[in-house]
Amino acid sequence: MNIIGLIPARGGSKGVLRKNIKLLQGKPLLCYTAEAALKASGLARVVLSTEDEEIAKVGRECGLDVPFLRPDELARDNSPTLPVIQHAVRMLE
Image 1 (cartoon, rainbow, N blue to C red):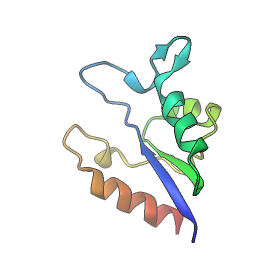
Image 2: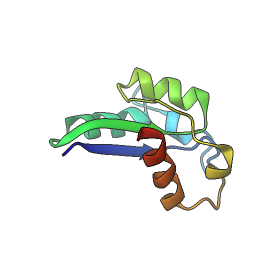
Image 3: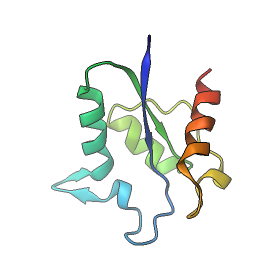
């Protein structure tokens, strides 16, 4: 069985703007998550779900697979996680 890791990262963060690509010790925060996921045993693939082109670019630079962009309606402040996961599954089928 192939197990896929999914990292949701939207561009519209409110508390800390653009937090997913903010640098911490010279590296985007997203890359720390990517590194941990890519090292996880048992994951055949690690996919980033985002609606944001810049986050997608950073994700690719960190080694993540970004095969699609998430629709804006799944990237709002009140968007629940389950529909984001369901969208990713549909896109990867």
